Image (cartoon, rainbow over all chains, first blue to last red; front, side, top):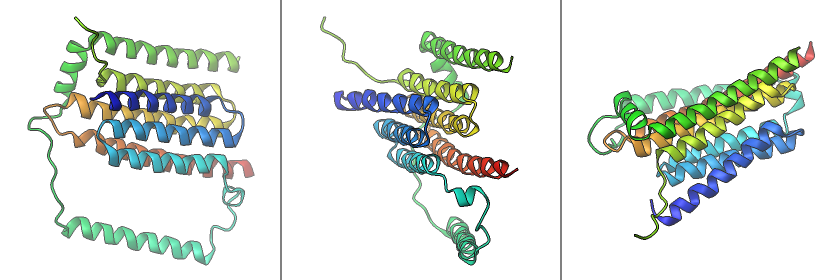
Length: 161
Length: 96
């Protein structure tokens, strides 16, 4: 990775973590939605920095949609009203038609086949990397996750009492 | 010997991914409001997606770099679907 990509990684990592904290701790709906949008921007940018632009785009769109949903949930649809309108049924039929078209395209289409460098991507390769070359860092990540889960369990237990 | 250039690797991605998962766990475990707790689930799945992309980019140097990206896309779509269904269920439960 060059210097620009490295700088972008740290920038997007900061954006993603700020968004995650805002989502976890926000007291209002708009702030929670903004946090989810920031997570999408950050995670999408991280994927882009790792040469996975398509996955980053999907992450960005999904989290932007989630942010909009969490920030301004439609009270009518949340109450279950207006779900049986003809327009909704027409939309469902359209979605079903699109699914059939996609299934047909997947069955009959001749897609380009992409390949990475030769070799295998399996649990053995990942395990060799994580438990031999970068064992200390893996232990640190595991400790961080363990501390977070334990802290959450203690906080939950304390509230239940 | 000059300063070493800073380079990004698997571990950096795993740290960010684990921090996202930890924030999601915090939201799910700590928040009393059901809607706020539900917002932690997409955070965890986002962390999973970032982790898979990082591993497939760096750890799969001799492998299929697209495998992790496919799982990341699935995780993003699952996060969106779970959020949608969860918000709908919370709205329905609120009626009772």
